[in-house]
Amino acid sequence: MSEPRLIRSRENPVLARLRRLGRDGSAYRRGGEVWLEGDHLCAALRARQRPAALALIAESAWAADAALRELAQWASEVARVDDALFAGVSTLESPARIGFLIQAPEPAAIDPGAATVVLDRLQDTGNVGSILRSAAALGVRQVLALKGTAALWSPKVLRAGMGAHFALALAESLDDNALEALHIPLVATSSHGGAALGASPLPRPCAWVFGHEGQGVSPALLARCALQLRIPQPGGEESLNVAAAAAICLYESARAAQ
Image (cartoon, rainbow, N blue to C red):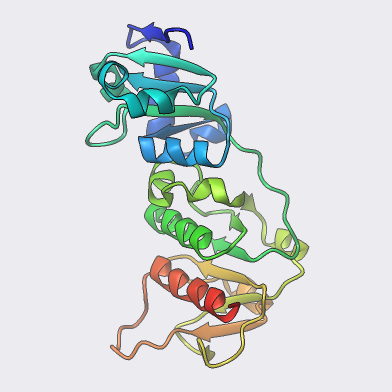
């Protein structure tokens, strides 16, 4: 591979685009590009054989870190920058010294029979990313995010997802009516009623519905669900964090399928 080009100016258009993507979690929807910062996300992209348009790498990493230099070469183009310039586009407390610029993925077509997670207006980016990570780990194939849910490809969701995005078919900004394309039962958790999780058979596959952190699943969507289940909590807390609840439910589905 030829020596990568060197970006010297803070005003370089590439760096300006990366700063915008880092500051605005939904900028990818307008610009069609996603910024993946850090070796873990970049390596996850490569492991799934997904293309990267550009690798940005700090000078110190290019000069002295063979692993990061080799990872950067996965991208179609590589650009080096002074470490201080890299820090200027970083969204991390400790800049990771490498990142990929990729084309924003097209929304996946809904697979009617695939094991699914539905996100109903979840606001917290950490919760959304954690649920994506649990979904990928526990055999879910697609995640459908309804309007009002945090932007799936925002930097904070990407960091919380830890590479899970590249193992899932993702669609976002959907209306409730889009769920009519699913040919599998919807299942929701409720802290107010329903059978205890584990006490009744789960449909396989199914679409687990997880709702807004404060309001839960909307009444209209809850009415569409074939099952409402509660997670037993012998410790007496009122409810679980939605990401924790999702991990428990998805594990139960995976266990039942064995």
